[in-house]
Image (cartoon, rainbow, N blue to C red; front, top):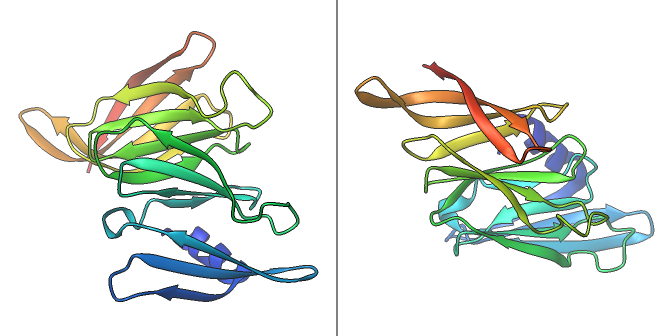
Length: 190
């Protein structure tokens, strides 16, 4: 888990537990009127694929069945810890998850060499829980992924073809949601 999110989890949690198989994490979140406990199951192969929404009300976690589970973690909301949606579309272990700055979109990266954009805005009935696009361009797994704040760019990091060999690199994608497409505009190699 990246440092920024690790700090956020530390701030909102007073305990974190993982069993000897790395299958079970438990955070205790303090609510205004007492304490409630949220338990999240995370597969060891995708334990890094966990992301808190920017507003701190939802968490997205990868499952061992190549799906993403979005749950509520807002202690003020009835149904605290409730699964809101399950997203499926990858054919390999999900290795990266990130929310858009406004928390209305989610993007996932996978060992299947693809990134998928999902609609997660509960107020948008047309796109909620739907796959909005697939980014194809990596030659290996995707290790990290993010949106620009203005939603015009997506950056994916992972294995990328460089001449005649695969290497670590990033791809910068230009996003045009009105036309429903994403185009790779630049590859940067390490």
